Amino acid sequence: MAHPTPHGLRSELWLNNPDNPGMTALYVERLVNYGITRKELQSGRPVIGISQTGGDIAPCNRIHLETVERAKAGVRDAGGIPFVFPVHPIQETVRRPTAALDRNLSYLGMVEVIHGNPFDGVIFTTGCDKTTPAALMTAATVNLPSIILSGGPMLDGWHKGNLAGSGTIVWESRKLYAAGKIDYEEFMDRSCASVPSAGHCNTMGTALSMNSLAEALGMSLPGCASIPAPYRERGQIAYETGLRIVQMVREDLTPQKVLTREAFENAIVVNSAIGGSTNCPPHLVAIARHMGVELDTTDWQKVGYDVPLLVNCMPAGKWLGEAFHRAGGVPAVLGELIRAGRIHEGAITVNGKSIGENCSKVEVVNTDVIRPYATPLREKAGFLVLSGNLFDCALIKTSVIGEDFRRRYLSKPGSENRFEGRAIVFEGTEDYHERINDPALDIDENCFLVVRGSGSIGYPGAPEVVNMTPPDYLVKRGITELPCVGDGRQSGTSASPSVLNASPESAIGGGLALLQTGDRMVIDLNTCRCDALVPEEEWNARRAAWKPPVLENQTPWQEIHRKCSGQLSTGMCLDFATCYRNVGAAVPRDNH
Ligand code: FES
Ligand code: MG
Image 1 (cartoon, rainbow, N blue to C red):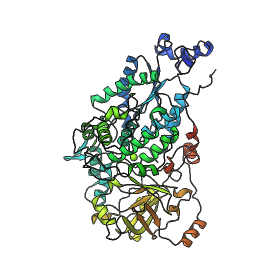
Image 2 (cartoon, protein in one colour):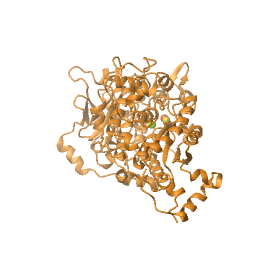
Image 3 (tube, protein in one colour):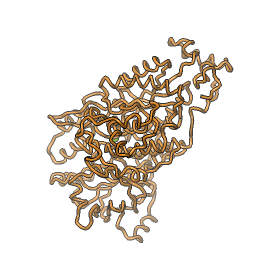
């Protein structure tokens, strides 16, 4: 590193700077007040920040109350000094109106903490959905040596002898409840059965997807993503992560060297192979923008659509996190993909080796859980990126288009992969819950369910509301899915093949704003179009008459988010923040 300090460490600008004794005294004195010695702080030991993302209101990451102790031991044993710092909590299932608001807030907080404190490298603890992109966005902006420490999935859930996957069982139970097959008590029992231990979602939801992508990006140690939170290996990899980050500081192995365009393409390919979440595209685009790497949502189709589905985990398949881990986890998936020529093997990872060196020889242990590339669960299992007069950009996850849905909506002779129907439009999720069973809507199997006002600005924060259950009377007849479209997101644990993340959203005048209940609309997966079939003259008249909604902010942050954040298609970033680079190298001014 190019800092003019005794040992060339950034931390010494605070802790061991003979050029500035007046300030060094102030920076050192308070840090020794709980027993650290001056010698430790002033003998050239790298100082490692460790983000603590777990806690009582962040239960998916609460395992990190334990893992950071092992990480600290690793940092110490490698000759570094660990400092744990708190992070604005992100909890997907409890936080209202949506945890998506917290990703950028947590990012801002972490950037500020790392910039302003004597850190030479950072261990980022991750787990629940947005904790991982917040960490990677921060690592990209700060560009100090950085490593991801996942918390790992919960143990597999079981209910009455069947696997119960977190999130997925809630969406399934909603349908059983709508059909009158379970009562309130059973609904609660089924849901709680899916969460048997500490850890994040055990399904291939956004959490396991994003932690797998962190590994595919090269930002965590090989095998880190899938280790279930309670397994002893979780503590062991935490220790090894602590050892490794100190070496990374000595090697000056920064995110800029790891998070290359090749690394992002690798992550996209892996996401298709694991049947990963529809939330990954906005998150990866956000990380790339903060890193200054060209990547947009259409790259997901170009790079990832024709990749087969290898991992047989819910919601696209049947197994859960423990099975995925025992089958070999991300290294085994990468091994299959590398041997099939789908991965940029030279991409460097945080252990200092290329992804090819790490994974090319790793074999799958259980080929029912991770299928061979030659005999996948499904060919062409990535995302399609749609456009049309309703939006410029939206996604559909093809790996969750089930047989029933395909037969009902996408197999009509002469118009395969195309469905035309009548739009039923809801103004947000509350309107949907209120009116879905209203007989006046006359919803049948030839309808689209559309939800708007659910985007980054409109809601705010783009909640996971697009996977909408059909009316009870249809569910009772066995129609458990209708085509859904919306400008919000949906849970990565949902198996609904919705058209989602529509951008621009209705609140800022995207085409969805002009749609009316009763309009004909069409989705065509051959041409990747989704359009309202409304005559142009009428459409233009509606646009001329459209007035933007009056949006009420309930908190100051909501106002900042609305003013500064972009659309899902461009990562829902704080747009102004994406031009900040190397914030860790920028030396903050003295404070006294
Ligand atoms: Fe936190 Fe799924 S809700 S990981
Ligand atoms: Mg979610």
